[in-house]
Amino acid sequence: DIQMTQSPSSLSASVGDTVIITCRASQNIVTYLNWYQQKPGKAPKLLIYSASTLQSGVPSRFSGSGSGTDFTLTISGLQPEDFATYHCHQSYTNPGFGQGTRLEAK
Amino acid sequence: QLQLQESGPGLVKPSETLSLTCSVSGVAIASSSYYWGWIRQPPGKGLEWIGGIYYGGSTYYNASLQSRLTIAVDTSENQFSLNLQSMTAADTAVYYCVRSDFWSGYPRHFDSWGPGMLVTVSS
Image (cartoon, rainbow over all chains, first blue to last red; front, side, top):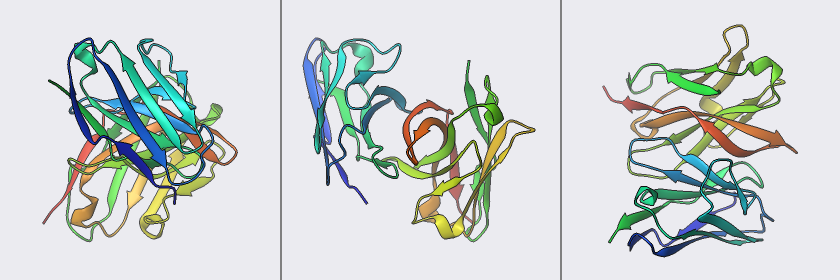
């Protein structure tokens, strides 16, 4: 199985900050990497697929990059509604998820 | 607009079988080239893929659950289901039904989710 490791596991930031979350795969997954946002008590929501393609309706302050084993999710100009948990997901083989990154208000 | 909704028991006894149904509205499962599946999340933990079914009927299961798992589609009701046998406390989780596109043998990204349903395993 491909292992997905996110870092950090949690971070604190302020409105307006730029935040970077990373996800590392245990083997080459090309660009088969997706990012989801999850708010408490809610289902995850797809933000970015294929490493860098923004899902329809997602604000442009969210961006993704990377290929191979190392990927990043960047939130530029953090908004109050962005405080949530973020999950990466590899779809190169049977689905596997990172452990999640909790983004909290400083 | 596509909507998914999980239904089933919120409490299951140890050793019993969990049966969940996902009702789909807004698209006909039988006529859409999508993958329909299940993902779970134990309280306070990360997401775990359970398995799913492609519209043609092929099933795909997490190897760690395969021996206890059955996923099926009922096209007449526009629903798909999950049966998980021999439940233990470790199966306590929020269960989500999901849709994904599908190519080259794997679901690629989960673009629609049900709201989720907490299933607790306890006597």
